Each structure stands twice: as structure tokens, then as C-alpha cells.
Image 1 (tube, rainbow, N blue to C red):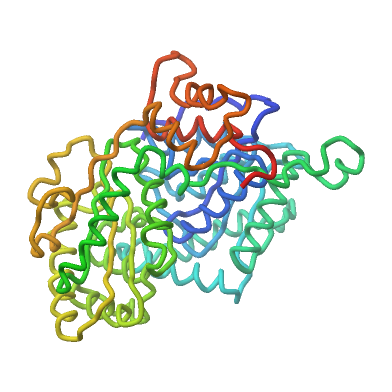
Image 2 (tube, rainbow, N blue to C red):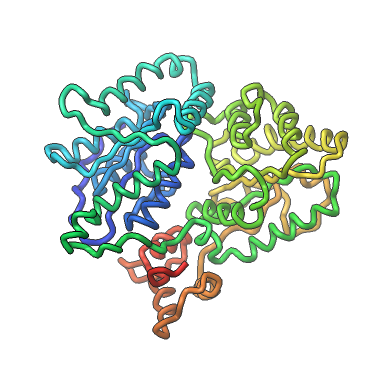
Length: 471
């Protein structure tokens, strides 16, 4: 890989402070979302996660370096998984990001850098160890052999006791992590107790920041898709033999699939367990065993480590279905799994569904499993022969295939007005909603209409839709 070009330094700006969140993703995924949420909603700091970046066929390493160098703050979450090493490199992408951040703030005695890691023996530490072991089990033998040494070297570099004695904060659970992140973000924004006492900032500033959540953005322009799922799930009453259904959420690469799935999880699937957010297979873990391990871990199966076939997974799932309905949501299957959607259907879903149907019939279990998978391909033909249309007539046998929802498309003005009504965004003064819609749908540079969902989401995140104190 060619050496990256020099990235521009971050411009000094009085607006929203942008923080780069660095961590491995496979183990820290849920924690990353919580950190992003508290930074956006409570600390008035922008934090766009790497898994949500908008872009094309970019060089990942170069893009990460550019983002680090353009950020105004850097937070590193340390864990027990070292991470993936890019081709031609000797360090993981997370390790590289830390090095770039040190270079970015070199010579600054009080850099806007923070490092947090789980306190040994706490629930967060136990969970992150388990996740690291799960990911490591899917890797090649050589990588497993080198992992401990690489991880120890990285931690030693971060926790540099020989020269600078930098502070590392430890957290016990997700609530600890959110609180520490909030303090860090507000401190970097200047909202410190001393500044408030001296009258330099408003003492109440930053206490509330009614910004948008993924589940709220996922409602925007998606009522037809939501209605299709609602009708499908209620219609399962006519098919008591069906044990599970897999929903295919598709659209172009920037169609807001993840936000929509988050909305569905919090509404139609709110009574399904577990309460886990949409996730991805860890980088480099694109195998059937890795997929089985990921699903078993996500569903919280007690015997997850012994699951090595779709039939074995079904045996574990049926025990959980005795007590409660289940669901899991897996992002970017088309890109992460060999063979894409077709491979997922052939290798995993079909045999899993067949075994689960047999067990459901034998044991007379009422609860079902709902799976959601996403595809970001612009080619709708890649689901031919794999998925059935959610809006067409179908027999019970069709549920052994994926059920394709209408493709997610661009956002238009009427979608925004309907959404403003749903969220009770005030039109005060009159014409405010019209102005908000115009800004959400216009590209700032060209002035052209752009209803690409993720572009609209980013513009809306810069708006204050409600007054302070509004929910």
C-alpha cells in the first residue's frame, strides 16, 4: 500500500467539536454506540463512527489517518482484542490510529486525547474478554499465536510509565463509560465547573442536547417499509408451523439501512430479546463458523462455544424460544460473508430454518425468532432466487428463504414534513419546518437537491429541532 499523503491539520472552529473514537469494533460495538450517543446528545460533540462513514471505494488506512488528523479530540477504548492488521502493515488499525493521534498532538502537554479501558474483574472486563476470545477463535493459527505479544506491546505503548505517565481511566460498566465520556467531551468543549464559576460559559450549557437518535432517523420516510414488516409479522398467525423469519433490508450504499433497523428493533421487535443493536461480523471473520459463533453470542446462548453447525445453533435457539421471542440483526451480510446474501441463505439460513421448524413442531413452542440482514448493493438482482417479496403472496415454504422488504430509497420533502409531525418538531416561527427541510435536502457546496438518506441524516444532526428541555 502506498504511503498516505499528508493529512491537513484540523481547522480551528468555534462550532461543534469533532471527536475521533478509536477502538476495535467486533468486541466494542455496543460500547461505541453508547459513547457516540452521549457525545452527541449531552456533550455537543460530533462523533461519526468509522462503520457509518460515507464514502466510496476509499483506501481505509488513508481515510482513517485523515479523519484522526482532522479531528479536534481523540478517545481510545482499550480492550482484549488487538484488532485486524492491514496488508503491508505490522500494527492493527487501532494501534495505527493511536500513533497518528500522538503525532497529531505531539508537544502538547494537555492534548485532547483520552484513553479508557475496563477495570479488571468487572462485568465490562469479563464481557470484553469473552468477545475477544470469540473473535480470536475465528482467526488463522499464526494470528492467534502473535496476538498476545501484539496486544501487550500496544498496551505498554499506551500506558507509558517510563516517560510521560499519562492518565488512563478505567470503567466498570457501560454507565461508567458514558459518564466519563460526558465529562471528557464537556471538558474539551470548555464546560468545566471552573469556567462556569468564572462566568466564562453558561453553567447549564451542555446539560441537555436534544439531538437525534438512530431510531428517530430510521423513521424518516420509512412508513411503507415499517408497515410491510408489521403486516408480515402479524400474518405469521396464519402459519403456526413457521419457526422464524429473516427480513432482508436493502438499498444503495447510503440508504440508511442501519438506522432503519434500529427503528424496527425499538418498535416492532421491542418485546423480542436480546436488546442488542445491529452488529457486523468482525473484520477477517467471514466464515460459517464465525457467523454461527456471532449469532450464538448475540442471542446469549449458554452453550455458544459448542455451536459448530446451523443445526446445532437451532438446538440452542429452541431452548431459548421456550421462554421468549428472539431476534438478531446483522449488518452488511452481502459484503462481509463469502457469497453474499446467496451464501448466507444457502449455508446458514436454510439449514438453520429447516432444523428449527422440525424442533418447533416436535416441542409445540409458540415463540419465534426474527432475523434482520442488510444489503448495501445497488444491484437488486443479487437477491433473485434467494428472497421472496414481502408484498407478494407466498406459501409457508417461502419463509425458509429471506423475505425482501421494499428497497430503501431517497428522502423527499413530504417525508420530512410527515416526520416533523411524528416527532412534534415545532413550526415556530411559521416557515421554520420548510427551512429545516430545505437545509436537510440541499448540498451545501453545489446547492443541488440531495435526498441521499445518510447525507440528510448528517445535515439534520447539525440542526436543533427542539428547544432546550423538549423531549
